[in-house]
Image (cartoon, rainbow, N blue to C red):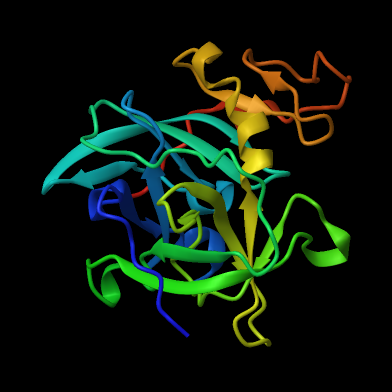
Length: 238
């Protein structure tokens, strides 16, 4: 079949690599990797929660310049994290207004294996195989575009260059069976972006409500919250 092409308005500089030193947590030496990308001109970036969780220092490389980033919000249940960099990006990925469809052509972009492979953006093409993930999870799309460790947090886009979802995981024992968080789930979460303060905001694992102050329970549903989660969280190089 034909290989999908990235539209001209979709630029390499919309996606970033993340190398994280998680040796103490993962029980291994050396960096892990992931991907993040800008979603507006204010410097907000999206990625997976598991990409940033447990990291110590956060920076992005943007046009050969490094910028510090700050973790603004995280949702462990949906595996989402929102970052903020003090930079006005030249381009960003806009959200699709259309619902995903089976057999729809998509493209996944990211940095599999991080800088170990190369610092060039990797592009793989495929289709949406299913509108549900594991155990009929409607907060996931199944895709067959090839994804590997390091693609986590990267965008899944349509032929117009619009965001359809975020790569989150794959089945290691199956061929080309990846999963992405769909646009509708992202849209619901990102409605709160303009209302967020610059302080760290936690998403309740039970109800998904936002918790902006250090407290031992969720004010929305009463679920117990580990106050250690509000301690400064370091991230690694993006």
